[in-house]
Length: 406
Image (cartoon, one colour):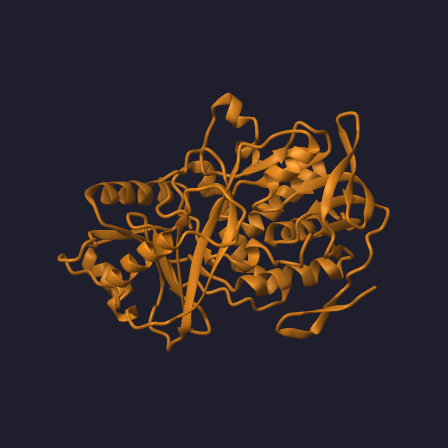
């Protein structure tokens, strides 16, 4: 076996064995959702004969490139239920995993710049409260109290007419979340195998019985796909198609600054989000690039336009210097909601299509996907997100319904 240290945690080692010839469950993808699924398979269902196969390195994909934002103030009942479950899990997860991954409930503020934004925001606050989700409508002066550095002048290009605020929302350090889940899954006997690319599927008729990898065949009783950005490629290899498109998603961080930004601010109208990380970097990002692609970078004009809008909202950031930029790859479905459940292939399950909402859903995605893989049936929280909704028409259309998508 080869012991490999986790970045920033030289005292923590996890086993990186050669894959065995067979497992009860194989999870494809060692990002946040794959690791959370393995953890909850062991914790909730007592299934520890599990291998998590990762083409690259643990949590080196979208988990290392996300926005760090956590919230549950989605409009539709189905979305609010699964994201609120995630937020409640987040609130207890540092103690449960015995790991400080810097979960900070500093609130998330969604700005309104037009009358339509105001109407949508007030509607969403009412829907959130009916679903037991904490939400408030703030007038411009109240917005300024929550975030004093925000420019609320009526003379700006995008005047702030108010905003919704979820006090329990916040951020967490994404790589630490991955280490915490990996640590606990490893302790319970799960194999975390890096550098192991799934190149095909072993089938007996219409039933998956294992996977082909660049390190040999691995038999499996059940296989779960949790490979953000590449779900459609894996599905094609298994013999079916997924209604998802892959898009680049960009973000950037500044150099370190003293704490000046007390919350998370998002604007759907200009599609930009701004927060400040624990070490002091300003974290900013935009929506997905319009074109399809697998490149981990995006069009310059997209991020440039969003940053111009961000500087108008936050004039104090005009002199901040960009430290680095990056892009992730996100799967987007026709209704901007995920797919979690069974597939047309027996014993093959899928968790994909989260778009920009994947990180905040991490614990609930793992919880529900583990239930589905363990029992063969959906959990009540992920039952509405089945693949067949695209043929029945029971869509959960979050396009524009949940403020900015992040």
